[in-house]
Length: 132
Image 1 (cartoon, helix red, strand yellow):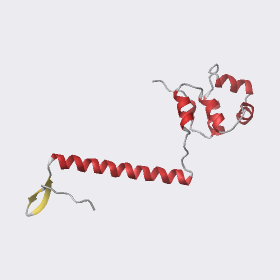
Image 2 (cartoon, one colour):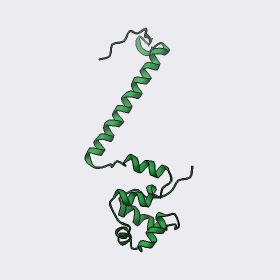
Image 3 (tube, rainbow, N blue to C red):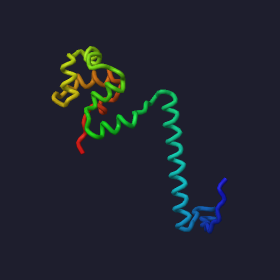
Image 4 (tube, rainbow, N blue to C red):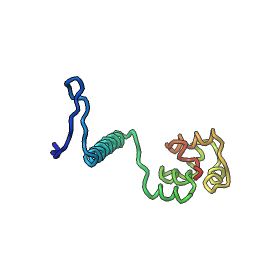
């Protein structure tokens, strides 16, 4: 248990404690402790999701390459260990079509994006470039 020296003032209403007045420095410290507790709880929940397989991680090198503007379809295909031919077969297009998407020379339809997302086991958002 955390021990703290305190100058707390208890204000009463009708003879019962109603408010606690604390110095601003102590209030700020309590806010930080609360934020730390929330962060720890969020970390614990994330660790449970990862351990259960409910949530997957993305390798840092993939994140860096995506942030650098490299084609997301290619990166996710590589992460999943698929060839362009295998991905093309899974989504029902030609390998040349996959090549166009991966080089930025083609724009997939929404239907194809859905198929790619399923085949690559990612959210569709991971395949769509975002404006700054």
